[in-house]
Image (cartoon, rainbow, N blue to C red; front, side):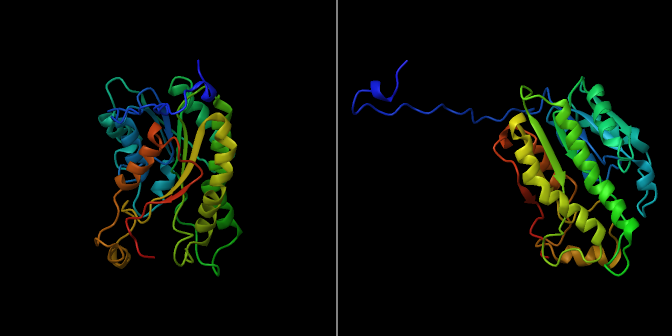
Length: 288
């Protein structure tokens, strides 16, 4: 072994290690993932789960069908099994694709869900994508009340932090490929979200917590990032709202669920191992 003092004067510097620049066809083979809010084939969670499965991961899908059933767009007509079947179509042969329900507004539910997912995935969860959120039950500053604020805090913020806590308790520093990806919204962009005060506050809290969580998880080798997917066509917008939003994209069209899914899946790979503590806006040039 030599050091700098042993090197002959004028000798060339040693060459740095040569990186393998070829991409693995299935960069998440051998990894496991929990994706929350993956209950509709038209949603972002479903698109993320399919991407992770196509990259080689075993995937557990969380769903809360009663929430979707209360919304104007309704629950997936095929139910959770149809959603899981679509993810299996994208997965590698023999991959695990499991699913189960949880009302994450219940303070006991996040830890229970993480434990159930880990058991289904062979004892561990490597990748946590917190995609779930409460829709509706919101309003302007004049119309919101304590119940609205509490409901959004419980589902959109508290449950995500409790999921991260449960994830940390299942991880060790020796396990590679630890990833947490949270989803925020456009509350910090342009004019904010004055019509959805409770939702905007709750999602803003996740964006604010990103760097704190990244620092907390760094000793475990886990990266933590947050993605703002921008306006994505998941079936919720119709009529004038749909047309107004479309006009504010340079290409005149909404984002598709697979647009943020590609970014989130990349953040789950080893290629993104040097990216942590970031809030990434993936909005396709949307003009606020």
